[in-house]
Every structure is written in C-alpha cells, then in structure tokens.
Amino acid sequence: MLFDQPPGTLLPVGGLSHGHKGYGMALLVETLTAGLAGFGRADPKEGWGATVHITLHDLNAFGGREAFLRQMDHVAAQCRDNTPIDPAKPVRLPGEGGLKRRDTQSKNGVRLHPSIARSLHAAEQRHGLQLAQALL
Image (cartoon, rainbow, N blue to C red; front, side):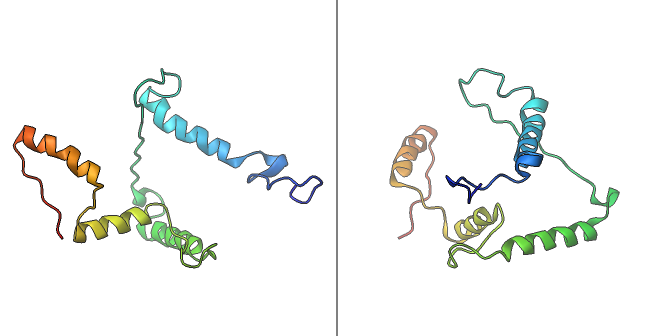
C-alpha cells in the first residue's frame, strides 16, 4: 500500500490476510483487567476506573528459571540492538526510563515543580509536618 497510487501507509502486523495482531492483545488486556475486576468500559465514564491484573508464575513449573532468563535476555538484547532513529537515544525496554529516574531520585532527591511544593505547604500546616526543604 505504501507504494500504491495514491500512496498509503504500512499495514499492521498480520496485513490484509491475517488481520491486526494488536486487536487480540487489546482484547486480552481488557479481559484480564476490566473483565476480571468487574469494572470497566461498560460502566459510567465518571470518575477514575483503572483496573490492574497481576499474574504470578512458578517458573519451575514451566521450563525453569534459567531457561526463562535465557529466553528473555535474548529478546531484550534483540530489542536493544535495534538501530535507534536518534543515536543519542538508544532503544530501551519499557520501564527502563522509570528505573533510571528512580535511581537518580533516590540518590539526588525528587525535583518538584514549585507549584507542587506550595500546595504541600497547606498539608504540612494541617498535619503538623515539616517537609524536607530543597537542597541548594
């Protein structure tokens, strides 16, 4: 489709013959979150309605811990080895940016926007707290 006249876009994984592969994954996520929680898209839109699904697996009941880590380390390496669009921004896995920020903030503290610090002042007074001051 990209080279048709007029030009189109790239088809999703699966193409015309196999359909959009992300559709099944999206339905699985809905099933495991909203479906199992009993609250979701079928409910009123007022308020916040996030749901979570957590699954725990005993790796030894499957191929074992070492086999799992070998497979996942291989997949992670293949992801990271992709050529990034911007060489200054290497490919990373979901969560890596957050983990890096957590480490930095654990060492150096969390920078808050000045408006947040001001809004905490009322809570500080109300609850008799003395929140840490910024280090200059």
